[in-house]
Length: 569
Image (cartoon, rainbow, N blue to C red; front, side, top):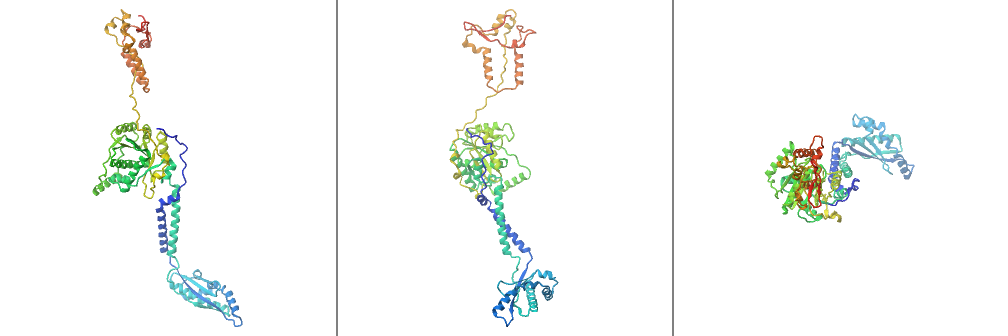
């Protein structure tokens, strides 16, 4: 078939990752990261120690009869700003510790006490932090009272009075579970988005139809659902799997047209796609049989599984038998076995089995899971080649290698069959096709069988003379020559019986065969030499053996009679 020139420059350029598509496919990673963030925050809030805060409020009053109210107010605003620093003075700390009756040091208590002046007010708030609500309230009230006493002792015109005593808090000031879990959710959401973006950039697998188009330039003909291998084992396909298979068959006919018979070869893109490619071929064959098409599968026997895998297979088969899932919905199509991978007779067996299967079937499905199969398939004219790409296992490099190898072997793939495609990853395939994707394949034709190998000796055998002629060779050399060569009565139209002309025809036929081993020629020469008749004529001890073994060319006289030129005795 006509194939476009191969592209050895590394294939078509890879498009940048589609991040929205990656988020849509891996949304569960973002959700999982968010949930993990919330759980971590909840655990942290449960493990962190509780702390409670209590606040006492003091009011500053100025006692100066000589000053106006405005002056008193301005004086109070100016003086209140210097009082918050006094709450951590040693005098206040020691008196507060004495009131509480604890063994806390002044340094430790100072880290749990603070005072502040709200803006443009004459209020002073004293806040205490403790591990218990009641302890926090007692600490704040004690520190506020001793601070008031200290200010009264320092200045006589002002008085700092406790206006709002501290009360025991109801809830802990820290940690705050709601805030922590909110931060955990946002952190997990951000980390999940970064992870999905990184996977979209670094994931080597073929995940989308757009990536298949960018890497291979081929359309996608089908999107098979996950679990095809298990469905084949159970013998029952789900509704979605059956719908995906039927859609694949319809799309294949839309791309290549309706033909009978048709040979479809499924080539896995890489070794990791072999198992799912074989399962896809089996599922497609069952669907075709259910549609009324005579279908046959050509594939090699899979290697028997051993050990734990074999035990699991037997257990699954037993369980499926108990559940009644062992019977297939459609009868299994016939299967033709070919030699396994690495067998030198595999390529010839594929062509031979295809020729046998075409005569009795409408569709022939081939599982080309050997690297040498592509060279044998290249000889089939009108072959439909599908490249199987597993979304969970096939890498971009494997897909490019598979398509490039097929084109190098002289076979142009028709489309790509994607497997393990989930519901969210499915797209409308005909909408992604181009006008050039529809191909008109040549009528199906197989290569002619090679001619059988023949070995022809390049030496001429002389016909054995009759005993009477041999006995009279010494007396009548002319008669001996006439016994060997044709008689004068023979005409050109009767020259087919001439042994020399038969030898020439045999040599011409031998020119059309393959070159054979020299050892075979030597054996044939020795055999021919043994069969030659031995006479005393022209056979002396010092003569050349080649002169005795070569027939002299024919001479045609003026009358048209053929004579064999010979030397006189």
